[in-house]
Image 1: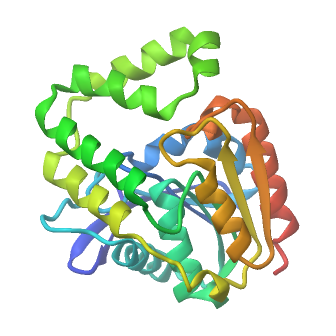
Image 2: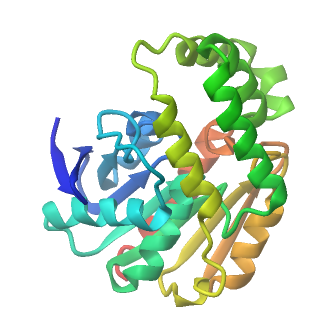
Length: 268
């Protein structure tokens, strides 16, 4: 697997498809491979660069706290190594926080930016959620943590309509032969909790699409409303009756609206 040296560690990435470059950044604890169902569509239109964030997948997992600024720097090192100057970004959850930092710190390099189920700052509620995840991740066996985590990620609607997919997802996560180390999970959670782009969102000049599920109890929709209100040129797409993982729960619609948004901004 190709790797790039970034800030003293190895960042793993993979490429597929052709067209304008698209950087895909996944959320807390998830490897880049979690983009599989989206990449199946995106690769028809874009050159997809899918990376494992530090701490996840095949990338290195250094000890110590991470920040979204540091993880954004990792992304830029990958794009520099590939000789890609300008690109689209799609970031989910923590990945959306990292995408914000890239668009703020490197505004001229971003053609368009999709921010999915993300936030500008963690309030007391979200900090409480992340602290709970940190504590339970370190004390529960994977077979017990996975069902709890899924209840926070998916909507009641999806649970009722797709029980087999929920069961298979939980079983797959619980049976991971190489689970993410506890220290890496905690380090990524710290990056999520410390993320704060208030006062900087106005520096984003790229067109932005924000997506959110109105039943998200992990990252309440108010977080996305805040982003929409403070980012110029931002569009907002709400997925009614779906939750944090609306991008999987309503996969066909999500792939369609995000692809259309990025394609219409190819010439930026």
